[in-house]
Image 1 (cartoon, rainbow, N blue to C red):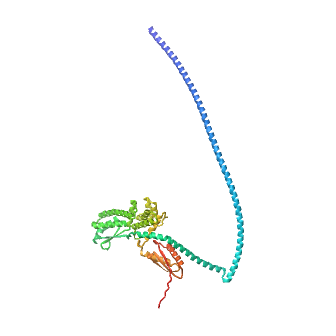
Image 2 (cartoon, rainbow, N blue to C red):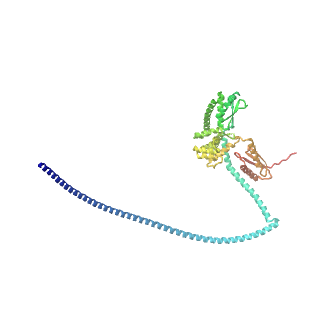
Image 3 (cartoon, rainbow, N blue to C red):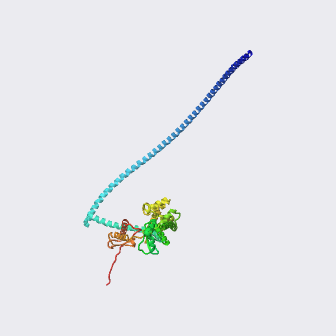
Length: 521
């Protein structure tokens, strides 16, 4: 037991000693670590201070460099500004010298002007003195002339003025006639040759159409089949085509009436097919009309292609070709519009070639100038506006668009081709036989021409001839001479231009002749 206690005691003692030794050793190691840490901290602080000192020195050096650079730049700027100031001062000095020289010149000129003014003033006094003397002499001479002639000065002056006025009128008329004759010789001859050549080389047909079409029937019995039971066939046909069918007493024929020429032509084609087939009922009518509409699209396309081919205009868009084809079924004053467009294109091409312009552009402008008439029933506005807007939307050339828009004078003409189209359009529409004119308006136009010519003094009789394209005026031989006759022709032409509307031009011919009649007995 004692041994055990002894062992326990020894073990406890050993443990205490071990703990004490461990504590001592731990403390010593902590002190050593603390010392090492403090040493490291001192080293870090020393190194940081050294690094801070180095950076401080570097910053000072950089600041000095920046200061030196700024100072150098400032000095350069100062030198530059001083140079500029020096140059400006030199320029001011030069300008001052120049102004001084100019001032000296002005002073010298002013002196010369004053001398000239004094000279002129002296001359004016001399002239006034001479004028006074001249007036005195003229007054004395007038008194002597009045006493000799028995006329006062006012009466003599009036006679002299009348004589001078008459002489001036005669001389002015002679000069005007000479200028006019020269202009006609130089300009009108060439213009007439170009236009006449264009007309002679153009041979286009005219087609006269109306608002009705006649369909022939094999017999009158077919009329009843067209009408159908209680009129159902004719009603179906009119509904499908939009065209009125007139069944009257005309033997073996019915009449199709409608304002739209294309729909009227579709109705004619459909009715002819129905008559030839013999099967006429509402269902069959709808089928045949639909087939006729498709056939009409082909016809329109072929007509447009043929027109473009005939005049030599290519690269037209399909929409434009279709609009051209529609013009085949449109008339204006009895003139087929498609034939008129081809005629204008050919005339434009001929005149362009004569004037050394591009005939292809001229033909394109002429062919498309009335394309707006293909849809003017469907759109608001004039056919020139409609056509120009249509081709502008289809990216056509601005030259072509302006030619279409300006050929009736609605907008200013921007190129020579626009003028050619206007001239060719007038030629095509005004040539004899091109267009029909109602008899009443035709007679009124002739009467108006004769009335305008008769309204002038000295006219004995006026006659409208050549379908109103020429007016011949017979004047009294004693009332006017040849120069007065020339003036009268010009005055009549101006009055016709001002007061009348007519296609093309009207020729005014004044005839002055003396007739002597004797009888042999």
